[in-house]
Image (cartoon, rainbow, N blue to C red; front, top):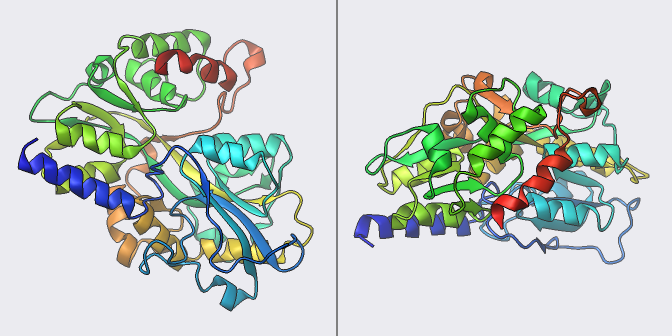
Length: 370
């Protein structure tokens, strides 16, 4: 490995170890207790049980610079009795099914599952100061049948990057290559559908559109499917990868290390929003709403976005430490070309013969990754 690529790998590794929430670097979820837990806490005694991604609710345990919830208890009078953190969407789903939580940060698929299972309750946005400062498009995504179920927190989108010193940028070539790394999630099928060029709504695929997307993915059996982003950056640093599906943050990280990665030009891409949701079994929501207010405020979203390598949902957070992330994700300019994820079949119904259910996606996905 030459010196430049060795430096790239070292830089990437150090950034990920620092605690990037967007990275979610370890496939196995590990509960992380609050630094001042309350034994035998209940959900109605002024305490909170929280489930979130690593890097989303830092209290200084990893770095004194990463602490935007450490003063929450002192300023609100509420105590964090349990703070469980995970690194992957799969880990989040497992933990959410094991016990009730007062508040949970969920992506689009899990959010839909929690609503269907009645594990979360509607949120009164009038009780969340700054809710109107959240981008209207994100607020609309959290509204189901006229009821608000989530407070948008952090968001991101995917792009395809390539090593410009080795290959030319072509999206179909990227999908067909053995030297490409794709996100290990069934939602990546939506990106393949966009690359095929035959769809307008990538999360509302007909059987024929799904078949074509899968055919594109099945062209290569040797590609990498990544959960741990260190595999992504290591692949470019060692020269093992030519292409990858990644967030703009990782492109920025590799470019900073001197790897000549560029972004493939695409008409549309996919993204997601993680939102805070309110547990259905919370008898007294006072502290839960104090938490929702806390994480909606610009200061918390600013620090979380900078630490996690994502963009804040609250536009007022795009200053100071979060300014670079807002610029990197092109806030205000890129939103129109991002198809934000929903749990398929999105806004249409499968029983009309048009859209495929998400179960079809999840059943098909392991045939690619095994």
